Image (cartoon, rainbow, N blue to C red):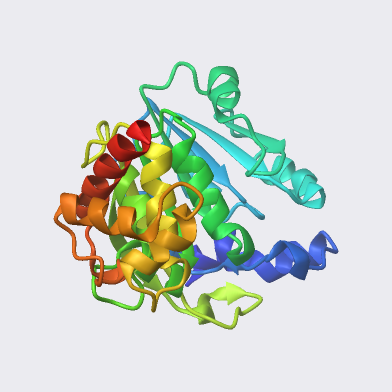
Length: 294
């Protein structure tokens, strides 16, 4: 118990009180206080002295405290400018940590890696994401072409279930397929709402995304693939043919779309939630060929 009290996670309330900091609901601030969960997050990646870590939203440094002991270099991106003096004070003696003020959705990660982590053999992202930016940030990190090996994130349990979902389930959707196109997704641990200050209204989950060197499906038009996927899930109860007609009605007639789906071997009466990523990729291949000819 004494060891836990000496950690930042064990002193969260005291540190906030001493710094006279009130938490901002607009930033979705919930600080993790459970050192066992922190250990699970850090151990999800085989970090070494040659590893670089980008931590998004360090808060007051509960997770950072473990990362600086495990990784060669750590960069914390903090949106709340009020927390930076606290972080600089808490980590004044650590030479392998840098903190920058910034919005994780707007940061140039290529430049950040060049400036802070250029000598690292491998680079990873670890984050406790505010719920309101979860999906946009996941998309940004995955599609940006950044040289990340892994992204370990603590997110709302419902969103985590969407990332890991299988076809024929309610959670399965466009975010599922987007994540699975760029990465393999695995559960790390469940996180109770009771281990945060302040306590959020829902439980969280830590998931690990290991970025793929090559997508699991081939496509000549990635933009078209995701356009088809988004259309299929925009109104989940629509059949695939009707959903795609709503999206492509300016480019093809309903009869043409029906013919294209037949060529792809996919029944247009199916719904998007029943299709695998490979089946969507096959539809995109046929549509790309037909649209070029029209």
